[in-house]
Image (cartoon, rainbow, N blue to C red):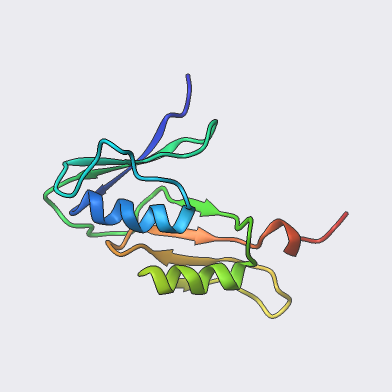
Length: 125
């Protein structure tokens, strides 16, 4: 078995794929366009892509699965601010005064995701 895609239900697949493309730096598939019922954000191999699929109902409760992201080019707090500028909102802030913790955000359609500390922010052993 191979983990191929993480699928996210949404109202507007192309719009949400554009958000995730800007967050990750991964491209939206060349064959997808606004109005398509499913849109793929293509991840670099061997990572799974993000597949956005149109569903008629809106999000009602907290999802039971979400993505934890670790920044590679910025620190956690800078990545959180960038996510907010791109259209995300803070849902729960688990940062502590000692620098540990993470932030749970919601994408523009309310799907939760977390941003953890970057590798550079972790204690060196």
